[in-house]
Length: 228
Image (tube, rainbow, N blue to C red):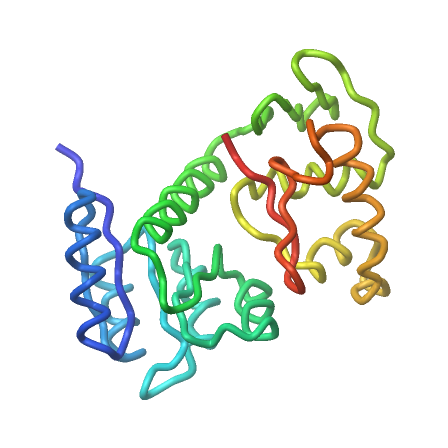
């Protein structure tokens, strides 16, 4: 019998840890609590979690400093923090966080983000050549995009944007990450390039481009391709 998926909850507020412990346990996860960065690193080494829910405001260390360490240990990182400024979200995601949820939070939303992070973790360990989002199918090997079985022509930049989001399906990818990978390091502030490519993708793939259900904008942060 395989062990249940382990989630480490890192937060200096006992009430928050108890809330997560109750909801995660009901969902079938094994929960380990940590109130400090030191306890979090010990749990990472001993319990080998698949997911870490990380508060940034820890008493002994800035939570942002832990993100690369957690990712380096192979766990997904979902930041759950009262720091809801766009700059903080971008910083966390650029450092490797899988997602960011602002406090106060909805427990069901956090559970959904955990499921998405776990799916992405599993996909990254295997060969995923085709990603589906609603009626759209993205073949990452053949570089073909289909909507309801019909091939759709995208420009090279539109395809590169869609493919990069497909590889991280369900997760937000920051403007800087997208611009650096697709247009090059000298274009990290050229957000209008992304807007033009995203508009083209929506016009060609969304049923209603004015109400996108495929490609979601996270204002000031980045884009997310909705999975499933």
